[in-house]
Length: 256
Image 1 (cartoon, rainbow, N blue to C red):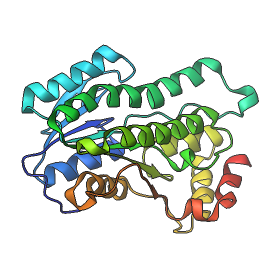
Image 2 (tube, helix red, strand yellow):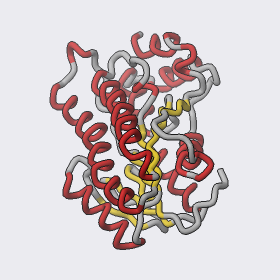
Image 3 (cartoon, rainbow, N blue to C red):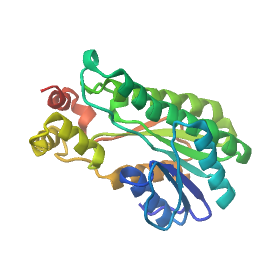
């Protein structure tokens, strides 16, 4: 998507791969200066910061690094997240639950907590949090992930209502299954011997007949961070190939 981000600074967590990387490339193409945050190093021209998004001091440090480098944060893609393990609620590991909630909820909260004061001082800014269709409907076998993504939508709406009159917009994207490491990890958990069979069944249950691409999610993120979305805040945008429109057909794949 060709949007003008000349003179803007885009900060992206979970930026080394997948949706985060696709968004980084889109922002850079639009002329933005890009700061990527992830747990591991990434290749490319963007400035990179290694950080654990669950640690307040490290979140504060990645915000400071962006400000030290470029002086502002105009767009914040609060994207870092993990899927956890597949298991029914009655059998779900407590430590894994804490880990997923830590990254997906506390990590998003801390990003908001430390970026919003910068934007409030600027009196401008756009934030996009990565939720999921799992924040809107259930996915059996993923209690921690589903709970975390419902929470992201709640954080998005709360923050949006708090800062709208200060020139800041906060929205969420809700991807369906995306062709990234995360969905392939789940395929392998569901059928270690034949993950491709899960992929075929899952994609056949999606009305579009395929997984969404990282670039398709990134296009919506770029739009929501652009001036073209100047009246949009507190919203969640579903990008799922029609998955939530048909509901149960897809969740049956995860149950069986």
